[in-house]
Length: 402
Image (cartoon, rainbow, N blue to C red; front, side):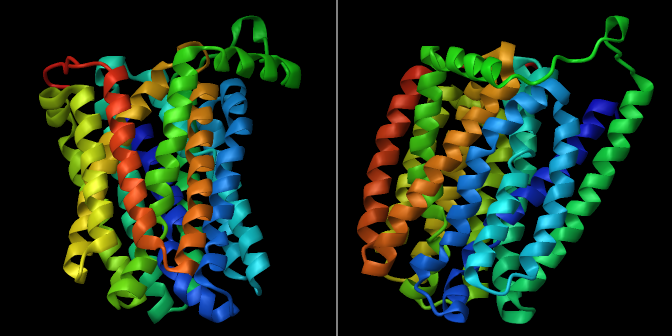
């Protein structure tokens, strides 16, 4: 096993923890609302706070990763997640819990996007979608684990126990990353000529570079599309467990278990990504993914029994990762000369879009409008998929044995 493949595995563990921490609160909303005597929509602030801070902090981590090294920043972010996950477990009130979740989001922001950028730096374009899909196996598995364990912890251990476990997992991942980074540095030292150090961070230079990126039509298109995707697909995802509890009468743990099927759908895509890419091409993946998301949302909105919602979770999971993986590849290629900044801008817009979606759907939950809102989101995703399919490549060559 090469040092790069080992690093990919260790980075994937950190990504697993990051996604688990992002989704662990989804099945907790109803219970948190009861404990703190607020509505489910009000309790969803714990999700929106994470998403907003996660998105905004991308603007910080992008240039930091380009200057200090992407892996080094990932290590620091993972250690910080371990700390703030422990703080979250101790939160005595909802406002403190929201603030702690915001701090967790700010820390986790430096993990997955910079891992994607590291892959972009080290993997040829022809193999990149498959490699990103391997990273996606970790993120999807983390989402599944977080959603299931969040529901399980609410009923069996108490919601605070979930954050204690996450803190320990983050600490393990950070320690392994640090050891692997030291091993790679020792085996392949790359000092800068003449002992030079990277230039100091300049806010004016960063703003100028970001403005230059935003002047590129391709960059603007990718960022706009991913923001809309975040609002329509990711924003609705946060309320699927609440829909399963309030609409179908499931318990919190059962709703968390159903949400695992969303992750199973994504995991199936991740494992078959190479074959589906060869069969459908990027255009076909975008269209098929959008269609499956729409079908899943409609089943969740109007299904008369829980089995329909279960099937909807699975369809939406396969579809989301088909569409999103296609956009991830576009993000790694839209500005290769500033890949760290470009990819973290991509993540910033994704999660700002998600936070907007969460806020809009939260209002609908408290008014009983969740089914119509899910239906509107389904229509929007279909339109989005059609637009994406017109912009991406048709067929992508997949090297034999890759």
